[in-house]
Amino acid sequence: MKDFTIIGAGYAGVSTGALLAKHGFSVQILEAHSLIGGCASYFRRKHFLFDVGATTLSGVLPGQPLGKLFSDLNIKPELKKLDPGMTIKLNKETIIRFSNLQEWIEEAERCFPESKKIQKKFWSKIYSINNSAWDFIAENDSLPPRSISDLLKLTKFSNWKRIGLLPDLFFPLRSFLNSLDCKDKKFEKFLDEQLLITTQTTIDKAPILTSAMGLAYPSETYYPIGGITKPLELILNKFIELGGILTLKENVNSILYEKNNILVKTEKGNEFKSKYLVSTIPIWNMQSITNGKIQQYYNKISNKFPKGPGAFTINFGINSNSGTKGGYYQIHTDNKIPDCEAGAFFLTLSEIGDTIRAREGSRTITISTHTNSSHWENLNEIDYESKKEKITNYILSKFDDEFPEFKNSEKLFLLSGSPRTFQKFTKRFRGYVGGIPHSTSPSLLMLPANKTPFRGLFQGGDTAFPGQGTPAVVKGAYQILNYSKYLD
Image (cartoon, rainbow, N blue to C red):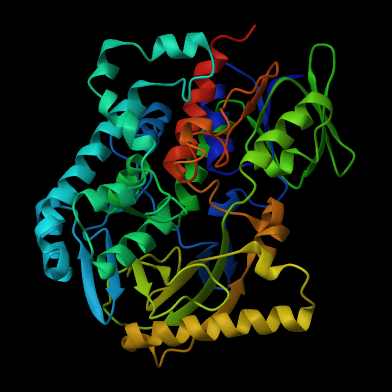
C-alpha cells in the first residue's frame, strides 16, 4: 500500500507527486488519459506536435512556484524568455507588451491616448501589487486560512508590511479605474480581454489583486522548447526516478474510506489503496465519485462555484519560411466571436527552429478563445459540426487578416475543439477548463482549500486555491507538501 494516491497527471498531480516522493513518501498517480498533461497535454499529427490549448508559461523566476520547483527537483527545462511577452492586435493596431515596465508604459500611452494621463499611475500600481503578491505567496504555505493554526502562521512580521494587499481581494479592478476617472472604452476592452486569459473574467468582477498578477505576467513569459508539456515530462522523470509510479488509462469512478486507508476504484475494476489521497480533478467531478459527507462537501462547494469557463480551440500546421516571431499573440475582433464569450482569441505560434514541434520550414499554430459549455450541449452531430465550422471560419478569416504572410500557406491537419472535446479527452465536468473564474464575490479566500475537512484527503488542481494557471497549481502542490508534514 502506498502513502499517497494522486488522481490526475497534469502539472498539479505530477508536481505534487514529485515533491512528495522527494520527501520520502511512496506515491502512485492515476491518469484517465493515455498521455500526461491534462489541459496542458499535446497530440501529434505526422511531423507536427500541437499543444491542446494556447497556453503560456510564467512564474519561473527564483522564488516563484515553477522556478522553485525546477530548483528543488534539480531540473532545467529548455525555456526561451520572450520580449515582448505578448503582441496584441487591436483595431488594426499592434500593441507590444514589452517586458520592461517603462517601455510598456510608453507603449500604453501611445496606444491609449484617451487615457494617456493615467497609464503611468495605473501600471506602476499594477506592477507594485504584482511584486508584493508574489513575495507574499512565496512566504506562505497555508492559504487560504481554514484554522486557528493557519491564521497564526499568517501573523509573522514579514506579512504585516503586505497588509495593504487585503483590500485588493475585495474590490474589482473597475473600482481602481473609476478612482482614476478612466473613461477610455478602448483601454477597458483591452483589459477585459487580457484578464480573460488569466483570471477567466473581466474588470467588473476580477479582484484588483489577481488582476494585477494577470496583467503584469507578460513581463515574464517564457516559450518552452518542444511545447508546454516538455517541462512536465522532466518533472515526471524525476518523480519516477524517486520511486513514483504512474498508471495511465485508469479513470477513477469511486473513492471509499476504509478503516486505515482510502480505496480508489477505476472503471477497469482495478483497486488502489493508500493512506492519503490527492485529487487534482475538478471539484465538480468529485461529486460523482464520492459518497456520504465527502460528497456533501463537494456538492456544497460546487454549488458555491457552479460554473467554469469553456474553450474553443483551433490547431493547424503550416509550411512557411516567414520570419514572423514565434510566441504569444492576442487578436481582438470587432465584435464577440459567434457562440463565444470573448471578443478576442489567443494564439501560440511555434518558434522558428523549434524542430520538436515542427520540422524545419514549418510552424504550429494553436488558437484558443472562451466559450460557454452550455452552447455545446444537447446538439445533434450536424448542428455541432455546423457550429464548429462557423466559429472556425470566423476566427481563421481574422487570422488571415492579421497574418497575411501566412494567408497563402495551406492549413495542415486543421482541427477544432470545443468543451465537448475537452470533456471527452480530459474527463473534466462539462469540458470546463481554466478552473474557477476569479471574483470579488465569492472572494478568492472562499476557494476550496488544498486541505479538505476529511482525514488524509487533499484537493489540488485549478479548482482549489490559488486557482487556474500552471504557477497556481504548482503553488497548490507546495501547500499540500506543507500539510503532509503534519500527517500521522
